[in-house]
Length: 367
Image 1 (cartoon, rainbow, N blue to C red):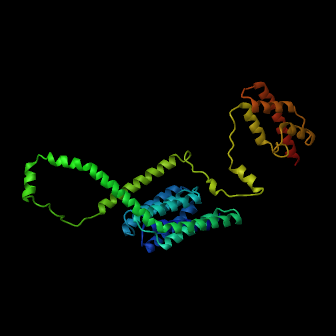
Image 2 (cartoon, rainbow, N blue to C red; image 1 turned 120 degrees about the vertical axis):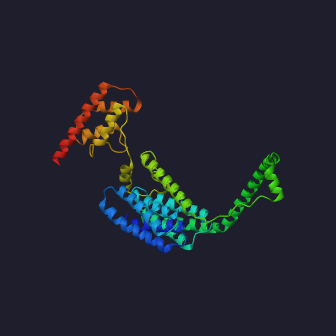
Image 3 (spheres, helix red, strand yellow; image 1 turned 45 degrees about the horizontal axis):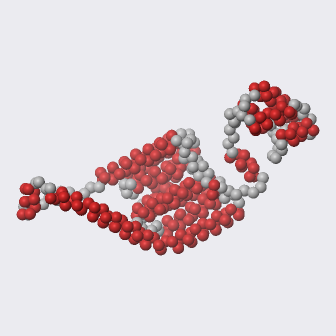
């Protein structure tokens, strides 16, 4: 994967998330992203304590956005948070970033209650195509993914006219639920009115002597509410990041099988060997067999589809290795068909395995 293409894709992702969060602030968003990427360059060059520098950059971005009043109070926290999520962790796959873009695209539609602009849709399509291009291994896969995205996009645009009807149906259902709850609670309100004991309050209400409440003395200032909301978002974000960091060895999304590259040829075997994690078994004989097959290299190793008897015969005839093959065959049979521990057989097997290791060392020295 080209580094410059990855950074371009991440920039488009951040621009999309920012436009979905803060509507109509394209100039401030572009300046914010350019300044963030300029600060990102020395962090990447340093290469040490990157997470500490990213946390410091995150706090600095929030302070600058608040002090210069670039965005709303919530966006002053969310936009630096998006920047932190995209760049702070290196092992996030492009498909997980694409999944996050689609998720926030849907959430933005629900929050703003207006359909995203044509520029936001274009950025989402461009980010999707770049992600598929970067993760494709051959031309056939690129063509198949392009056709799939085109088909899904056409079907999605055909479904878009149905969105107003879906919203109207949800509002209609909420209305009927609210009416039902109101009918249920109405007897409780009537009972509370009949049990009213404050006669002076009732008299004042009936005679109209109750003074109206005083109006607001000054204009409403939403600064405190916005600060509390931003503080809650920061606390939740810190809590989530801390939990994910503690459970990073337990919680792994892994590879998405639907997006695995289809490779036909000799590369498939090497990629499977690289991605496969082998662990030694618990049984003593099986563990020694595991070590033997792991250490032996061609031409001494056991070939695919070759039985143990054929393997021993090939070593004897082609490689001129003379060992007690019956012990190795018996050890393989015991490990395959039984779970018992045979210490005598284990020691004999270790001796023959050590003989094979010595033959391998002699051949390597001759080369």
